[in-house]
Length: 135
Ligand code: 9YT
Image 1 (cartoon, helix red, strand yellow):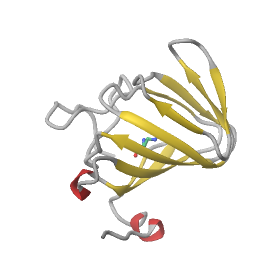
Image 2 (image 1 turned 90 degrees about the vertical axis):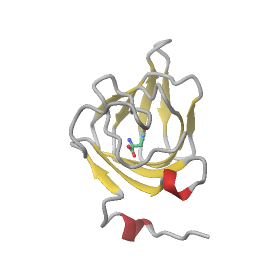
Image 3 (image 1 turned 120 degrees about the vertical axis):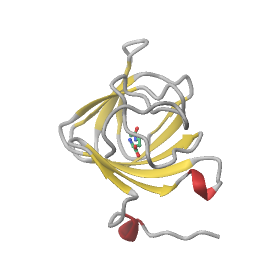
Image 4 (image 1 turned 135 degrees about the vertical axis):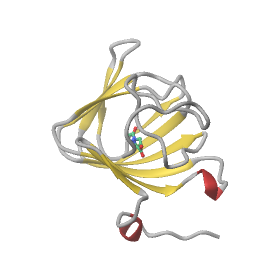
């Protein structure tokens, strides 16, 4: 059994931080769970284009308000506490926050902890060339 505390993990390199969001990786590939689990905080009033071409992702909103736009259809969905979105089609999307949003995220396959967002909004698969600075 593995037990971790978010409040401890966020003081370590499990926390990655960018200008618009931070994310604490509570479970990573080397935990051998078949998925990774993150608590992501999206800062208020920010907008992000993400496209996880190599991963499936589930995102559950714990707190905060915003929206997600499906870039394939133009459909916009409200995000508020209790809502989950499942990127079952590797859906390219824009996530917008009105207030700070705290999200619980699971990735399949699990991320290793070393990925950075590439310019196209995706994460590389393990072994693929990664261009950009580590966050
Ligand atoms: C909301 C969202 O897509 N979160 C993804 C996790 C975060 N970007 C991370 O841990 O890299």
